[in-house]
Structure formats: structure tokens, C-alpha cells
Image (cartoon, rainbow, N blue to C red; front, side, top):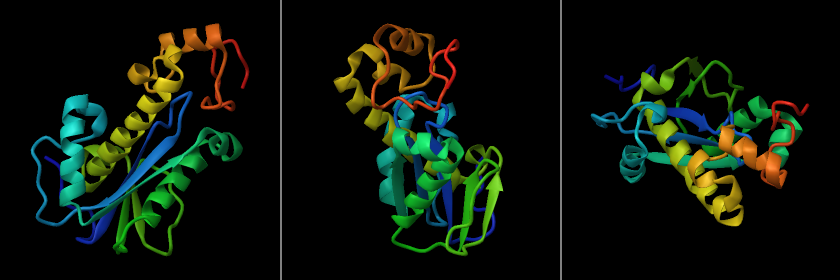
Length: 195
């Protein structure tokens, strides 16, 4: 059972999706949920079926106090590295909140201060707290929707299925067709290629 909050009723949960992908953006979401919020199926987005993520997404948006979602694209990822890009995406998602939280809880173990708001990093936080789990669902569904659009432009990589992750199929397509402007050139795109 997920906990309602970590430290403060007025806190935002933060998480990202797509950090390990070879193509597409890293996407972050921030969300503030009302204290009354409860949901029986919400958990870490990686543990949910695609159907359940898609069912939860509009519910989370409508029941939240506010939320923000932000993408950081491959050119910037290559410029500042994936860790910094993930944190930048989180900061940009926070920028979109219409209510300033008094506390931030972040999935994982790395973050950089945001506007002097106190924060805690929580390893596996997306399976412990509602707001981080909700952020994980919003980040994942937003990124998946973006990758579906890219799939229409480059169907040979089958991004509608692999979403840009380093699957055998995706790597085989890179070997056959080369890379696109949506690939992260600083990543090891093929096992025998140096970044």
C-alpha cells in the first residue's frame, strides 16, 4: 500500500522516464495530489500494464492539485549528459506547477536543489508514495505518446513498441538504417561502437 506523503501534505512527487533509451527525450513529471487522494491500482509505472497507465493518466491529471510535464531532447542530453538532463527535465516540470509546494520528493538518489524548496531523494520512491508513483505514470505516458509520433516519421525502428529502449530489434534497425536526429549520439548505440 502506497503512503500518502513523506514529509508534508503540500509536497510534489517527481519522477522521470526514458533515461536508459537510445532515442527520444527524457521526460519528467511533477504532481501535487490532494491529501484525500487514494487509488487501489496506482504504483510504479514500470509495474503497471500499458492499459492501466492509460486509464490512470486522465484520472491523475483531473484529481491532482496541479501537475507539470517536461521533455529534454537528445541534443541537450548529448550536451549535458543523461543525469543532468533528467534533473533539468524535473526542474522544468516543476516550473509548470501552478502551486508552489513546500516539499519535494524525488524518485532515485540524485537531484539538485530547486528554488530553495527542501527535498528528499527516495530510492524506489515510485513504489512507496502516491505522488512519485503518479509522477512516474504521467512521465511514462507522456513519453510513450511522444515516441508514437516519432514512430510515424521513422517506422523502421518500431518505436511504437520499443519506445527507443535498447532492444535487439532497435539495435538491429540502427545497424541496418543508421541513426536519426532523435538518437542520443553520446550513448553506446551498438555494442561494438564507441560513444
